[in-house]
Image (cartoon, rainbow, N blue to C red; front, side):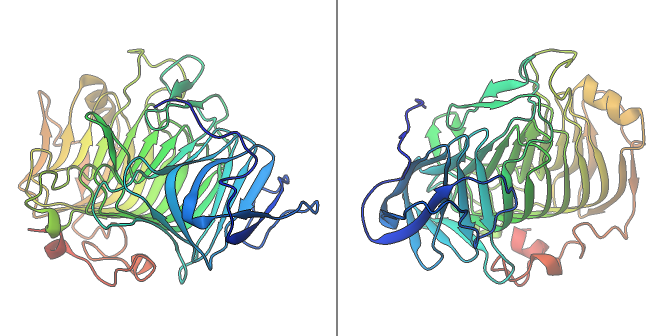
Length: 404
């Protein structure tokens, strides 16, 4: 994609709704009631044509009583902030419509359990629109400088600040994402490029997307309470040296897509994908901590694997439920198998109706994990945990809903 976006201090300057536009403050814990200070005048913006750029030095706070029609690319530039209060709804037009936060920009999605923020397509179908993309200053292992260029938005991300802060996301629902903008590339629900540990991401639900639910491209961000259902590719994906953590994950295929061209792939796809075989720069190899997670599949497709661990990725896994995938743990590449045979990094795994518990190309991996039939995963075994109910729109979910 070309790096062409508006450089105006406001978004599209038409009429209808009034938003407060203020100077940015140094407060990184903004909420929907924080309009900053400085007495800057209000501006009129049309929520029916929500696109463009929020310029450096500007804070935009949305009005939850309005429905915002995302009609193109919306960029939060370096030094700018976007605040989205609880209950706000954003409806995206078909195609390459997406929200991207540049390095040094901040987003504050302030949903609550009773009033989540919702991004969805104007029509409910996988791949209808793009998704949400965050770019941070934490390192990628693609280069010695820790930087690279994002495949989504074609913008530079990464750096050396592992504690970088891109804002906060709480109680966010993303539906219908994953637009394919060329034959080889498509959006994820939530894409995190070089996002640092100063960023808060908690209670995010991605459903009915065409590609991955959430993908990490390097960085050190920690996430918790993640729900992914019915995506066409992997529920959770990482690469480029991500070294954060993810806890309380409930991810499942959906029976509605059992016979679809893309019925869903892996629960986790773990890569490093560095350009240096010894991975001496950036964050080094991917090595996140994954704890308290449930992954539910079905037997369709060639990538029915609970956890695919490969390409030099490391990781630490504890209290994991893997249900109804053809293969539970699939190991690939020497650097990855060397890591998992060197220590006790996969513990308390509960396999439910998994025909092949583990697979590897050329090495016995039967001793690298410990089985615990009592492991509860995300909190309730294969059933939807209480923390995932209601704000997601779900009141129940289990293996039968995944299609087996």
